[in-house]
Length: 456
Image (spheres, rainbow, N blue to C red):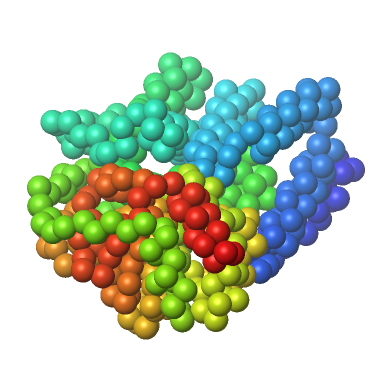
C-alpha cells in the first residue's frame, strides 16, 4: 500500500458523504444549485486524490485529457441552447456508458489475472456501458430529429431480441471462461451495442423523458460495476447512487405516463399501440388582441408550459406578462407535468432561467383538483400533457396517462404555431372544446403582443 492510500480512502469517504448530502439538496428547487455544487466539489476532490495513485497513468496524459475534456465541456456549455439540453443530456449519458465500457475492457485485457467475480462484474460493466452508449446515441438522434421519432418496429423483432439476448449470455460465458481470447471481447461489445439500439428503437417520442432517465440510471449502474472491476470504493458508491436515483426518477416518470417500469424495460418485446380514431369539431381561433380583454378581466391564470415554450424561448416574455397580470390583480400559477418537455425537469429549468418563483410552480396532482377555479389556462407549446384523450378516449395510445386537465378551466388559450400533433403523434380533442381558443403563431411574439396590450 502506497503512502497516499490512507489519504485517498479518507477523501473517498468524505466525497461519498458529500454525494449523499448533494442528492438530498437536489430534491428541492431552492437548494438544487447548492446540491449540484456540493456534488461537483466532492467529485473534484475524489479525482484529485485519485491522481496521487501513480499506478494509473502518467501525469502528462492526465493533464492532456483534462485540458481536452475541459475545452469540450466549455464549448458545449456555451454553444448548446436550452432547447437542445435533452440531446446534450442524452449524449452525456452515452459518454458515461462509453467510459465504463473502456474501463471494463482495460480491466479484462490487463496483465493482472482476474478472479471469476471480477471478470463477471467487468463483463457487466462492459455490457451495460455499451447498451447505454448505443441507446443514448439513438435517443439523441430521435430527439434531434436526425431520425424519425415514432416507434420503429419490424416483423420478427421479438424473435431477434430473444436471439440477441441468448448470444449476449453466450458471449459473457466465453469472456469469463476464456478472457485471454480477444475475439470474445469484440463479440460481446458488438452484441451489446446492437442491444442498445434494439432497446431504444421501438420507443416513441412521448416516452423520451422516461428513456433519458432510464439511460442515466444505466450509466450509473455501469460505473458501479466498473468500480467493482477496479475495486474502487468511491466509484462503486457514486455509481450506485446515480443508478438508484435514476431508477427512482424513472419510476416516477413511468407513473406520470401510466406505465410500469417493466413495460418500459421490455418495450422491445411488445407490439406498439396505435389508433386511427378521428376527432370531430370546430377549431375556434382568437387574436392576441381579443385574448387581452379576457386576461384583463381574469382573477386567476394558470400557465401550462411545454416544449414549444422552449423552442420559442418564450419563458422571459411569459415572466413579463406574469408581472403585468399580477399588477392587474390576478393570481398567476404554473402547472408542471412530470414529463413536460423532453427530459425530466425540463420546464423547471426553463422557468428558473426566467427567474419565476419556485412557490408559483405546482405539480399536476396539486393543480388538477382546483383547475375548474382558474379563469384562464394558457397552454404554451404543450400538447400531450394536456390531451383529454388520455381521460376520455378509450383506444387512444395515451389513454390512462395522467394529464393536466386544462380543458376544465373556464377559458383555455392554446398558443401554437399550427395544428401539428405532439411528440406522441396523437390528435388533441382539447383544441375542439367549446371553452378553448387557439392563438396561432410564435409563442414569444404572441406573449409579447399581450405584454404590449397591457403596457398601453
